[in-house]
Image 1 (cartoon, rainbow, N blue to C red):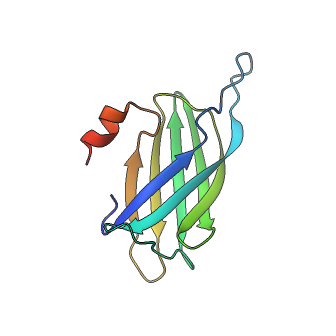
Image 2 (cartoon, one colour):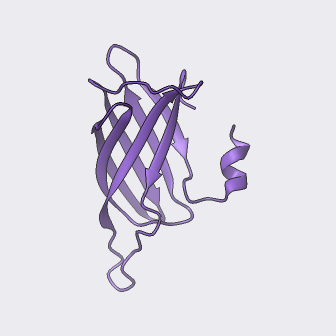
Length: 114
């Protein structure tokens, strides 16, 4: 939940770090925006960022409108159970709203925040 909106974050689940080099790969970051009733909220004219923290790595992505209610960007990250993502989106003419995610944590943790 982000103010009057619901953000659904989609990250690449199987983006692995290279075992030797410890390098993350460039992957997509997608956020779907709806209202609390599940209705699409148009993202035309919106801007946003996603900050990804996984282990000792930190990556940032600029999110841009990509369809009716979708924001998309790219960042170098590796999937990890301790991954945390902070998403901030400013819809056209509205104040910025922020949400925090632990996308690869257990389902129990994810639903405890609701």
